[in-house]
Length: 239
Image (cartoon, rainbow, N blue to C red; front, side, top):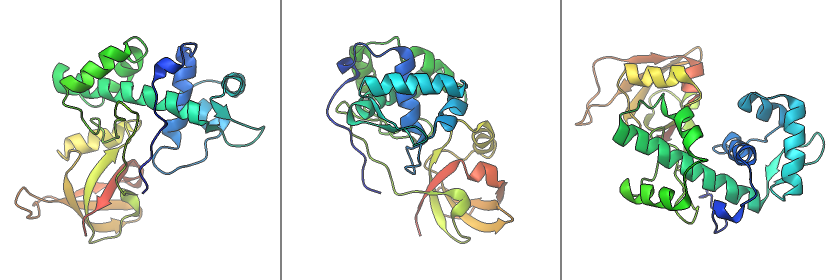
């Protein structure tokens, strides 16, 4: 996958951006983040928990601000300026999530809502110092890349776990934190981001995994995950 980069810039370039505009920009980016999917008004409404008319009004406002490109009944796409704003908010959100897990003892299933509240309140200076305090992390607790100070970021080559064939050895790169059952399953089986596993079988949409031990040996107990759960996990192929 070609690394995705933003134009140089900061969220401070948008002094007039409201909290709602920031949330919309970040959500539009997130919906297309890993696979470049088209973002529709209905998908945006469902994700944000608002009505379709509300989305229509906000998208129209964002288009007037030069943040999105949108035509009636066509997908919604961020402009370069909109992408810059979105990545600035993504950087804030993911650094705060990382801080909450590492230093305040939050579980990775608890941090999203807390970060949503905090990301709009902190200054750019706070964000940069938090980045330094954390040692400039490359990914958040869920494996999502964190944009750097210049808002550039890299994505590993990944595939959804549900699409990986049997006998493949893979590394867990990311889990969708909007799917609580996926977080719970990984916690239950003590499989962290970065874990290496072997796909031993695929059964009617489900996937059977065999975790690899610290010395590369196969663990004794296999893990069976439903299609819904493996659809929320991204892995990179080892072999």
